[in-house]
Image (cartoon, rainbow over all chains, first blue to last red; front, side, top):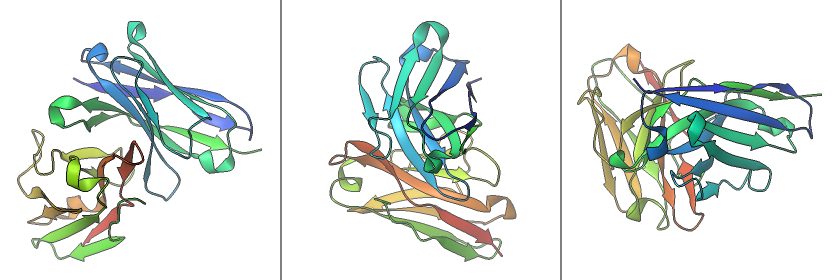
Length: 120
Length: 109
C-alpha cells in the first residue's frame, strides 16, 4: 500500500534552518510528483511547493519562495524540504502528499505530518 | 485565501449539506477542482478529483460540481463521522501555484 512518512520536524530557533524528509513506499516513486503542505495550529491548509517527477520542474508558494527548497532523491524514494531563515509563523505541521496525474493531479495520498516549532 | 469557502456549515444527521468554493477566472474555470476531508487530528484525505469524480472507497454520499468560477461539494445522509474540515483545491494560472480554500468546518447536529 502507498505510505508516506515525514520526519525531521522539531524545535528550531528563528533564523535557523531545518530539513524535512518524506520517505515513500508501496509505489514507483519515480513516476509521481509530490507536494509539501503545512497547517499552522488551529489554521487551514497552506500549499508550499511541488516538484514534478522530472525532478526539475518546481513551483513555490509566495510565503516560502526563496526560503524553502523542494527536492527529491529517486534512488532513496525520498522527498525533501529544505527550510531556511525560519520564522515563528513557519510553526506548523508539515505534510507531504503525492500528486497523481491519473486523478487530475490531485493529492491522492498524504503522510501523517511532522511538527515544526520555531521558537527561541 | 484565493478560494473562498464558508467558515462553517451545519445540518442534522441524515440531511444534506453543500459547501461552496468561490474562485476567479484565473483558477477554477480552467482547472480541475479537488476536495479534501480532514477529520480531527488526522491528515487530509482526497474526496473528489477532476471536479466531480470519487476515488475508490469514497461513498457516493459525496459529490462535486463546478460552474464558472465556483465549485461545490455536496454531502448527503450526513453522519456524525463526517464532522471535520473540508477544503477545495485547484491550480491558479496567474499565481502559478496550487491554491487552497480556507476550509469549512462541518458540524452534524
